[in-house]
Image (cartoon, rainbow, N blue to C red):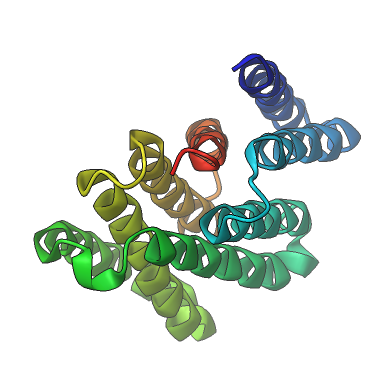
Length: 211
């Protein structure tokens, strides 16, 4: 419990510093703050990790891949690498959720709003994506499955609420990234998306060891 509070506090401070750095254009502080925030949620996952638990192992893999994605997204030239890292991170979360609860036990009704949300997001982003249309649509499908898994494991009582809420926040933060990258650059995208993203990741890290 104490380590969770300490690392969550470090992450919160790093996110505040990150937003300040972006606002004032302090590039070195931005790189340091984002890296510190990512290291905090990965460290929390490892602190809670049971090495013999395959669900925990996949969750740790997902957290680590997302931290790699965070680092890559700091530069435009490595954006595509970051996108791949995040895609693999979502796949790792799906693997963890599937091991916790086989996909046959995931409620189909939970999938309905996710399909609707994915269709809306695809329609919204489509005119702005250019050559990245198909990769982004595939990405949307994968993150929707990830959220479905997080919600399902919670609703079936297999994993705690942190899995569901963390997955939903991760999804919402990806929409903020997409808006900033493809629709309209704005500090507001960062001011909303980054706290939502890191909150989602710390909650997913808190899921480790709770199954």
